[in-house]
Length: 530
Image (cartoon, rainbow, N blue to C red; front, side, top):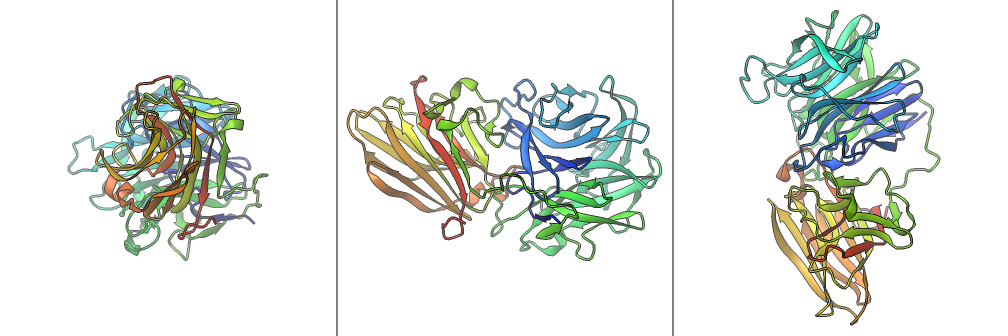
């Protein structure tokens, strides 16, 4: 039997939603200000997952210009009905709630069909036994919010032919607890003649929880589960290693067993840099109600899925090695900030990944020239070999660890051809203000066309170290850099950190920095590769 190790998706994979189609399982997550949007994962055993594409991979599908890091795409839901896959989501920065469809989950997905009459966020779809489709979502209390987070869950029929809501919208639930805040992420199911709403409440922080209610009619009235919440870690204290659990979605296997995906975080010393991750839990039904991890009542380190172990042909590696010189396209795992300018990026055979100078700084809420990967481990090393042109116009390039445009760490290289030197600066940006915390000036050979330099960013929990290498030898530029400010607790928002390559500034717009490769490796707390 397959054994799922929690989190099943480590790093910045929030707001999971999953569905089953025969023996196949598909899962999607929020991406907020990153492009492409909504990664789609596939599994045959709920334990081993591989990315097969991104739902929103065209600029026409996903306007993100000017949006904040924790704006953009919120909480997608994936469903399947009658040969069609549906993803419904909210772009809070442009268009609101929308639906996209595909016959193949790997894509291509349709252009978004917006639902201007659908207020609020966190939409989901439910297909009843007669084929009728219903929209369920959450919006502010129609009678006026009595306090922040006083929202209601509502339902309305959706006409699949016109992709428009029809009939009367009805508010059906506003949470399991008294004076609950943020009843959100609702999903609707039907089992044994009951309609069930599984939803989150308490806010997506320490008091986060999953709860459930049910009714004989889809329109209610819904009765509260007397054992709510069905999953939370808020009672385990702030020192418990897994916190903020909630936002559950249920799935049934072909054998009739049930599981729940949920989000949670794994802070270190009270600081969360990885963001909200995807976890899995076992579900059984008792007295007509779902019970999560019976006898345990919390998320576990591992979950026996009851399915045949289906490891990918290529086993998952803890390190990711990208040789850009030999790649025809960047993989699906790579992320850009907002809508990238395609003219600023190019893969050149035999050379590498070219990033153009002249773009805006990472401190701006704009489409900076940046391509990154999710930080997936508390302890990791990111390394690259890059080639600096002789004329970059004082533009900088290097590696960045990004929580947001206001909070990030940059390893910035600037070539000064006149001085025959390369300036290496380490900047920690906090509240949008750069602070130079370390720097070195290294001599290079005169009249050298391009200067090759190796960059290494090593993160050990909440500290970082920076090293460079080249014709000048190996140099340690900074160590024990405090990066606690790159956590959700300080920076706020809903995202985790990404680590990637960037170029910015300069007045030579035709100048490019060439990145030969990128390696991401998990290490132990002392810095050795796992």
